[in-house]
Image 1: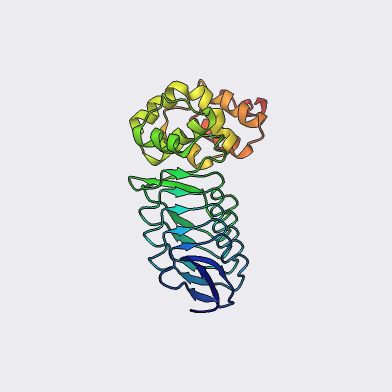
Image 2: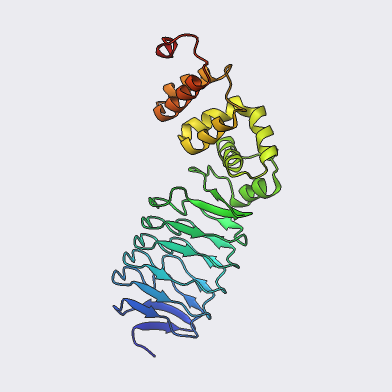
Amino acid sequence: MNQDFEIKDGVLLKYHGSDQDVSIPDGVTSIGQHAFQYCKNLVSVHIPDSVTRIRDFVFWNCISLTSVNIPDGVTCIEEAVFWNCSALTSVKIPDGVIGIGDCAFCRCSGLTSVNIPASVSYIGEDVFLKCTSLKHAPLMLIDGNMLYEPKNRNGVEFSEIKRLVTWNDYSMEMNAAVKYDLIFQMYALGIDQEGTSDYIAEHFSVMFPVLIDRNDTEILRKILHSEIFVTEQNIDSLIRYAIAVQKYQMQLMLTNYKQEKNWYQNPDEILKL
């Protein structure tokens, strides 16, 4: 047995080597906590199919790690497994994984894509915290569309989010800001377009401030393009709110839209807002 690996009863307790490319021996069934922590030279890891569990903090601060395969038999990606693996660029999570622990990919600043299967029924808090190369933090794929992690989950469980999106149950109780965030995203992605449109139209006055607070220009652009929700009657209140909370890019988009629609009574009106 390679002396670089400390293995007991099928559990890889610690890797003591300094190789850039590592293949974990066949027969290992679990990778223990902190097993590769601070292996700063580690570039790639091959995990054998015999592994069914990868414990928390396994690759903590492996700043050179770019490639790791996750076997199909693994069902829990536990807490902070890839914390600060800043060279990691993409992750494909296999079908069969049912949970992703808190901070699993925190500070993976090079991460640009993540594929999360529908089998995942639990996602912890701050899974993609400070993943600065991700435009949004992906949460799950639904009918080929990516749904994004709310910026603040506010205690809402992943199972509740999945129920809202999968069953289109807009009557369910949950934190309002998270609920509105998700429904706006669903609308923008074309998920249950009719249902989300009806819900947004009915609750627009309370939902729109959440969109401005999030400073989500991409979704605002789609809301404006629809020409359904923002009207000559409500646009001034939306502009004033954007000014009040200092979301000036949102304010600019709204004022430009008002000009495009010729909703100004005179050229000096914009100065009064």
